[in-house]
Length: 236
Length: 258
Image (cartoon, rainbow over all chains, first blue to last red; front, side, top):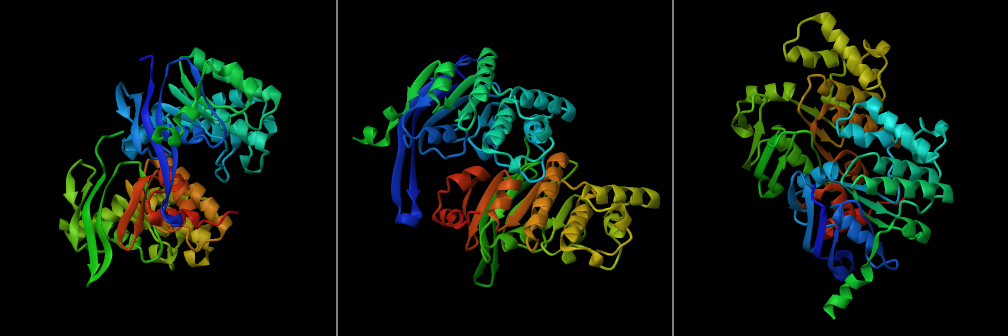
């Protein structure tokens, strides 16, 4: 495996608001960095600096205006910035995982199956997937009586733990984390730090946003300052 | 996963006199992929679906389908009989109104069994067993098998229509507003069921809907239509979270928050 599975070069992003007379909102420009296998880099900067937008571009969730996002995928290199939807789906399936801030719940599916689903989708046996899901939910201290229930009615912290378990259950070589600890108590924040350390040890390249300074200090190998990519700065 | 698409559509147009139904639509659909076609009434999405399913013939353009034997066939050059055979076996069509896709005056079991007989199954016991199995997969109690669909609720009818379509193991299913006209709670159950079936069976599907939440839940890819043309297409979450075309931005911003 290549030691640098993700290389971002000169990426720029803006939003054009057609319903507001075509106003153009620049978000970031000149975004360049690389993430090595086994390290956890953290995007730093104040709210609105474009941290989430960068993460979303790396997952193909936001379109990219300019630049390249080179990902080691399927034994070759692909540019996610220009990849077809089908390639992006394949990258998400095999190469890049994403832990979002909020769980998007599906009606009637139990918390256990929400967590197991990414493995089942990748062809793993359902019972084996559930076994791994149980272990993760237990590690994250989610009360066992909740496992069989759909997470729609769970508290914010409980939903987030389901979401984290779902994001960490797979073995993607690249993992993006969008504030996975935002609504967790101290004990569960520590569990997430442990999970991240285990991923690092397994050679996963991680890139995250953490507003919690304790968590950030515990997991970050380095901080990428997003204010350096402020769209206005490049233009000026 | 195979590297060949299942359906290739190129520059498909349908005109009603001088009025545009749909114009210059081009896309590929791969096995196991769910494509949502969204847009408001009159945007051409149903015209497109009807052309693709050969219920309507387009004015110009081509659509090729990869048959089970791997041969590519041009849909609009097939004979009527060949197209009907495809429709009965390898394809499904789920109508918004179940009455359009079901025979309302024969039993639920016969509605499902009929499609099996169309593909040559003649063994009554096996047909009935398969029908029972499919009714349970769409969550209809076995003791309703001899009832006629007109005695069913709207949600049950829609689930029966889905069973009738999927029983022959189609590879491609067309759906026209499959949750339209149903109560919200019934919709949620149906969506969940459809989502599970599509994943388990590896179906490819083209789903026409005006409901962006349905598109997000069911599809991986999306095409947005306006005035008969595709104004934006891409990954479903990309189109919904970062809409680029003015019309898509309008659609997304018009969703009511609950």
